[in-house]
Length: 319
Image (cartoon, rainbow, N blue to C red; front, side, top):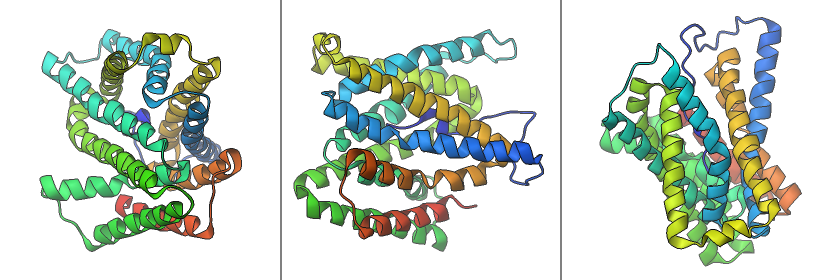
């Protein structure tokens, strides 16, 4: 499950993004705190999904519950944008394009991610998703004609070496076929999200990030709702355990909405670069939480794989 508001930095005309460190110490310190807490809350996502699975949820049900809790927020944001006199009207083609982007970024990617989490540990899932910037670089080279510099190639190699190391370790302690299938599903989620990133930015630049994200999330809610009605019985939602709804609420509000605001505000206070560096520890936090809370197996090689991929992502995201 991806974090929508973390996909693009917020657009504020009067508060430019910068990494100059010219802000007052209190503002800088609060920005660092917001980035740390936001990263921690995002890291909890895979943990709560695993707990929801253990309580009887399955991917489609959990996505429906999670999006149902988040939907009123996005409808409210869209209405607020619509009522703003400064908002420029947009045509139906742009609206449909944003909704279509929601299919790739927040329906398909999230569904593949949750499906893969049924077969692999939260550690491997988080790391496999974490390398999506490398996938973006490859797709931009293949389809947009962007050059692959040596640093980018090294980054891609390191990213996938890290995933391969952790994948090899996980096959030693679990069913190899299931681990492979889980990695394939989560890799599909990362590819879907990478395509979304490439296609969505031009549309978002025209209509603004808040309106675009709201439309994409509303569209994804419709897609997952249709998926659920086509493959499940509505009675499954009615008879679901209350704890599953509690986990869905936490995923929607605590692990997505609240940290997305924190991360965006951190970007404004300390800059995108510092916020990204802090965010790079997210997979490590997920690993520690998975070991401590879920009791997932681990080894020194897990940390080697994690560290290798983090270095690779750091290279591909560095200007």
